[in-house]
View (cartoon, rainbow, N blue to C red):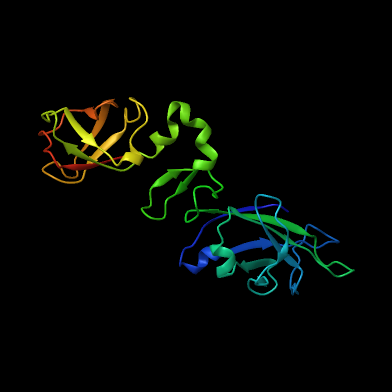
Length: 232
């Protein structure tokens, strides 16, 4: 049996630390193996990447309910907080007369790990909740600035330099989140967060990377310098 579980790392909500799996009888795999009691060595864990070695899990699984054949394993706080992309976990009946078929499954983490350790091309930045591109897995895409473009789903601020109109304005971003190409925002929605346009939504029709000038669908009134927005 192979299964993959996705878990957000370093979260206080305890349920995120649990994974469930089923076991099947060795003699009749169509039946679930019920009432299994685990002993040290039955369940081992290894970090993904780099050919990590297996060691005993800090906790042993327990059956959910009575004779359900479904088991629950809680990753310890140490296992859950480790800066790894995830784990391979194997479950083996060490008895000479096996009661259940051996199995393994994978737990992959997202969110809360360093950009150089995560498993996924897109991950959550735990500091602000934004989707963030993985430096490790997406660096090769920098020729078309896709990585930078994916990091622009966040706030901007109208600045001086040109007079805002019903359809055009100039805006700035933090240096490490600037868009990577002129069409990075085209056809995406922009929601105003402050000023007289707060909560209004318009569509971005054009964007000039060189100076940060936006052209949008016609607004009810021109934005003011200092108005903030988010691109969705």
